[in-house]
Image 1 (cartoon, rainbow, N blue to C red):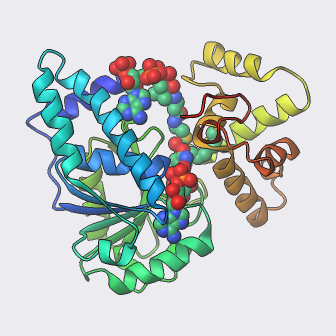
Image 2: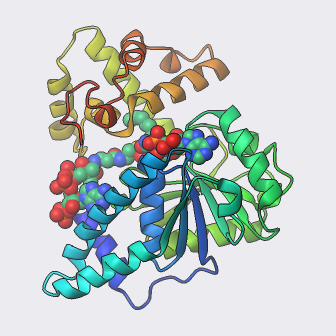
Length: 310
Ligand SMILES: CCCCCCC[C@H](O)CC(=O)SCCNC(=O)CCNC(=O)[C@H](O)C(C)(C)COP(=O)([O-])OP(=O)([O-])OC[C@H]1O[C@@H](n2cnc3c(N)ncnc32)[C@H](O)[C@@H]1OP(=O)([O-])[O-]
Ligand SMILES: NC(=O)c1ccc[n+]([C@@H]2O[C@H](COP(=O)([O-])OP(=O)(O)OC[C@H]3O[C@@H](n4cnc5c(N)ncnc54)[C@H](O)[C@@H]3O)[C@@H](O)[C@H]2O)c1
């Protein structure tokens, strides 16, 4: 409720932060990409949302439209017609494409939100770097990979950085702005200004594993899975404990289902490979089993809990 109130104030305020970035291309139309596209369009920017899968784009447009409706209900409580106009106008700023190269021809900023896999991200960024106008800033929403490692394949290392959003993007107020070793001050300033323009509170972090939030959240979540795996407490009780005993809005297992167990596994596996001695990053058989069975959480209808398929 409180988080949402702040978003409403950001969008109804006449002192909304301006950004020089007007054309944004978001690559990856899943959970995060659709949210990033939504907040950019809400802020008045032109958006092209790209995915390899056109069915994903159709689904994303539907969910963005629904979520804009939730925002409109808050901002225009007593003015439903203005609410409808807000949704229609925001939706009209979002175009979709399955071709990243043509979608970045006029981009001031590209935010990548595709699968958490360094090879796939490298392949994409090589193409984007060659095709984008010279002024275009390239950014990754990676949860756990190194920004410098992702940037290693592009020539414009000064115009590359990290923009790490949180799920659900329209509701969560934080944006971690990550300055890589070669990110220029101008790029960093532009990313900070853009983050504010889409209604986020920006913090700055070095290119360190997990940045701030995930470096703390992933070991916490992993410990919760291990606790459940050992049979020390039920999933429900672990989640209730952390909500009522520690004040989290969601318990750790609910949160794992919410962000995606596949994404969580990618993160743990990557860090384990890099830091094999770190006990907190060791593989968790139960997590591996759920993922191997296609139980990724909310998005597949089952994880630690079962969900109605949307
Ligand atoms: C875990 C370790 C693994 C890490 C993996 C990496 C993850 C990643 O890198 C980092 C993360 O994201 S970490 C993850 C970080 N994320 C977290 O930690 C999330 C923790 N969870 C939460 O903060 C809350 O449970 C939610 C906000 C998700 C839902 O709130 P709730 O009270 O349980 O349920 P509610 O009543 O339904 O919704 C409340 C209000 O929000 C509104 N709304 C919802 N979705 C919306 C959307 N998409 N659009 C627009 N609006 C949306 C809704 O309309 C309502 O508005 P109202 O004004 O009240 O009518
Ligand atoms: N899930 C979260 O809570 C969360 C939070 C913050 C950051 N992230 C990061 O954001 C990124 C995306 O995560 P997500 O949860 O949205 O994943 P997702 O699986 O919901 O969406 C990823 C989308 O990318 C598409 N895709 C894959 N390869 C592509 C390519 N080469 N070109 C275009 N589209 C491609 C897929 O079809 C899919 O629709 C990851 O790097 C993840 O680590 C996730």
